[in-house]
Length: 331
Image (cartoon, rainbow, N blue to C red; front, side):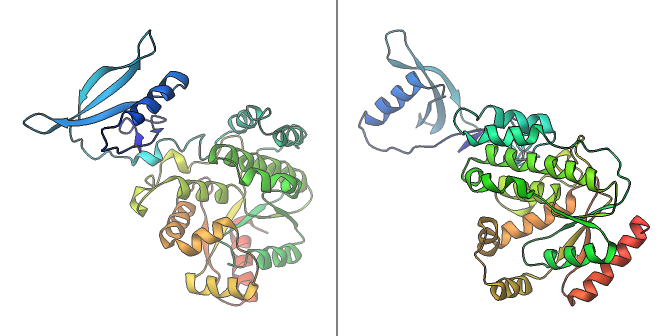
C-alpha cells in the first residue's frame, strides 16, 4: 500500500498492509520492535462503534520502551485525485532531468555498490557537449524487433554518418550489475549513460551527421510506463513536465520512432531466436505495459517523436526515412 497527499509531488510513501485477524500479540510485538529500531511509521486500523466507523491509530514509543497509540484519526472517503499517485514521484526517482541529480544517486551508493565508483570515474571523464551541433543528429527509437539495427546501419552508410548507441558500449561491464538494483539506482545509472552518449554525439557531430540507436526517449518511456500502475489513463496527461526534455542534455535534430503491429513484431522476435531482455518479456506478457510504453514515447517533447511505419521492406523504410531527414534536416 502507499500513502500520499492528493496531487502533491514527492508525497508518496510506500509501505505494507498487514491483515491479522488473530488475537495474538505476536504481530504487535514485531511491529513495536520495528518501530523502536527503524525510522518507520506504524499505524493500525479498527472498525467499531454503532456506525461501524473505521479509525486509524498512529503508534509511538514511550520512554520505557512500550508502544502506545499517539493519535487517532477517522477514515473517510475522499474524492478521486486529479493525478494518479504513481505519477507523483516520477521526477528524479524514475526519470532524471539533470546530470547532477543522477550523479548524486550513484555517489551515495559508492560504499554499498563498489562498481558505482568506476562508473562515476568514467562519467567524470565524459566529453562536453555543445547545445547545438555542426551536423544533424538523428535518433531512431522503437521497441525491440522493429528494425532499428537494420535501419541505423543503412542510414549510416547512406548519409556517410557516424553510428552511436545508448547506453554506450563503455557501460557494458556494469550493466548486468545495475540491472539487479532497485529502480532509483538502476534509472540513475542509465540516465548517466545518456550524458555519456551526449558527449560522444557532440564530438562526432563536428565532422559528420550522427545516427543514434535509442537515446533519452527510451530511458524515459520505459521508466514512466513501469512506474505508473493500472490502466493507460493513469499516465500523466500530455503536456505534463514529466515528458519534458532535460535542460542540460544535448537535444537531437530529429527523433523517429519505428512502429510495428504486435503480431509482426513477435514474428520477427521468433525468427531472431535470441534471448529476450527483461523489458521484452514484460512487453510480451503485458499488452497494457506495451501500450503505456508506446503512449509515453508519443508524449515526450523537445523534440517529439515522428512515427514511421516499419512494416514495409527494409529498403522501403530506409527511403521513407531518408525523405523525412532531407525534409527536416535539409541534408
